[in-house]
Every structure is written in C-alpha cells, then in structure tokens.
Image (cartoon, rainbow, N blue to C red):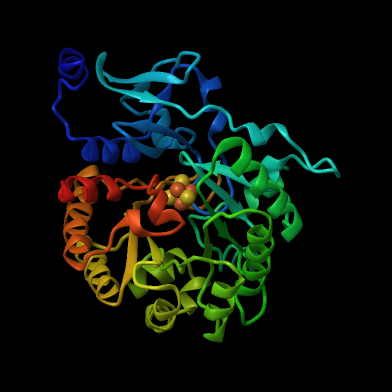
Length: 378
Ligand code: SF4
C-alpha cells in the first residue's frame, strides 16, 4: 500500500490542491461513454461528472471548453468504476466513479423517467429543480449569465414542474434503491413575493410524508420573513440563499436581474433565517472567479460566518451554451488562497460542513472546501 501511495502521488500534491486543479482545468475522459452519470445544463453547476478521490467525492468538469484541453486524463474505469488520473503519463491518483443509480431505471405511471424528476449529485445527494423556469431567465438582459436552467428543459432531459407527488415517489425510491442521504431542492424564481418558498414548502412536506430524508431548500430571500418558519415546519431542514457574487459591480454585470436583490437584503434575510434553522444550517453559494477579488470574497465570508451562515465557496465553472461559456475558470492558486483562509475561519467559528443537515455545503462536491476543513481539523 505504501509503495502504491508513493507511485500514485509522485508530485506530492495535496488532495485539496489537486481538487482545485481538477475543478479549474477539468479532465479529459479516455472513454467518453464514462460520462454516464455526468449532467449537462440545468440549474446550478453543470457539465460535470462526479468521482471520488482520496475519500472526497468531487464534481469535475468534463463537458466544457477547459476540459477539452485539460492536461488531466482519466483512464477507462473497470467494471467497479475504478480508474486513475494521469498527467503527462504520470499517475497522480486512483479514483472511483459512482455506478449508475438504480432509481434511474424507473419511471412514473405516466411514463416520466425518474431521472427527469431528480438526479443523483455527488455520492449520495438527490437533487431536483422543482420549477425549471425562472423570472430571471426570461430575457438575456436579466438572466444570470452562468445559469443553464433552460437548457436541460429544452433538451427534454427534465420536466418544467415537478409535482410534490412525483418528488415524493422519486425520493422514496432513491432512498430505498440507492441509499441517498439528503436532498437538495432548488427552484427557478417564480413570479410572486415568496420567491419560490411556497413550492419548496409543499414539495418538502410531500417528500417528508413519504420518506425520512433531510432536505435543503434553495431560493431567493422571500419578501415575507414568516416563510422561513413555514418552510421549516413543512420539513425543510436547511436553507440556501445564494449570493453567487459578492460585490455590487460584479453582481450587476454577471446577474443583472438577481442583483436587484442587494447583498444587504440577503444579510437581512440571513439574520432572520438563522434563528429558525439554526447556526450553520443556513448557507450561501459563492462563485469565485467572476471578478470578485479573494479579499472581497473573504470579507463577505467573515460577515457571514459571524452571523452563523456557512459560505460555500466554489470555483466558477463555465457551462457550454451560456453567455459565460468562454469565461476562464479561476486559477487553482486563487482558490487555494480563499479556501485555506475560509477553512481556518470556519474552524475558529465552530462551523462544519459535516454538521449541516442537508444540501450543497454538506455534499461539498463542487468545491475543495470540505477537504480543506478536514485537513485543518486534523
Ligand atoms: S455541492 Fe450542491 S450542486 Fe454541487 S454536487 Fe453537491 S448538491 Fe450538487
């Protein structure tokens, strides 16, 4: 085993830094059929495939422009999904791919494949976009430029509105067949002041009635703060309200529609949500590499951590077909600067990804942050 380690890690590169490299550069797949569990389009990060490296399951780009030129090559996996990553012919690490989830083989009575209702993210997360339309996506002048929420719908890989009953049916199957451990429910922002809280609450209630599965809801801050208690009562265990970018100028440029909801409005909502969901159970997603400096990102993280909000900072990954498809990914050293400082900040504040009941911060696959946390805790 020792010999194997020495052979497979000749560069001596730490796992968290290798993850930064892989998420920046992406990987080339020797066998393109391996992209079986990857996803294209949809809300949030896309064009990735999950694999496990040194115990950490990570989402790594395979379908976007940087990945086609990546110096990192993934060998054809064996029947158990085991493979290796190489660079310039040198083996850097062994990895393993998740097997195709069993619930993907099923369909509803009306013939809708379960995979069009929810998908497996990372290793054990069931993820769905309850409403695959968004008021911010209607026009290119308003759309968040990184988002591909309409692409998977246009390609017929998902349905526009997942009903509570459909979500409950799929969640139950995913727990029973594939042992999923938590669920992420995101949504495009519908018209109306609740900003999606209402459909998340009714969906969570239906899932919880069918199966005991921790759920994270993700939406914009609802105008009425009483929605936090209503979401919690309905069965949402953790809440994500995603800033995406942190300075007004970058938010205005990258997400002109969503930037109308100011950073300060988000902070008001965080302050109201933390007492309801608990310290560390409210989180935000921050895309690093869109123009905010490391100092900008860390300054916001400091404010967030202080009020008990977990800042899940991920490297921006361009998605094919979006206005930002040619935008560069952040250099690995930039991510290292942010994530190493953020992990120290989290430790100081006693916030841990492993304490989050459900959601992206708990899954951690889109960032090396939890690997930095593990390293610093050790
Ligand atoms: S971190 Fe969130 S978006 Fe990324 S794979 Fe995990 S659940 Fe999906």
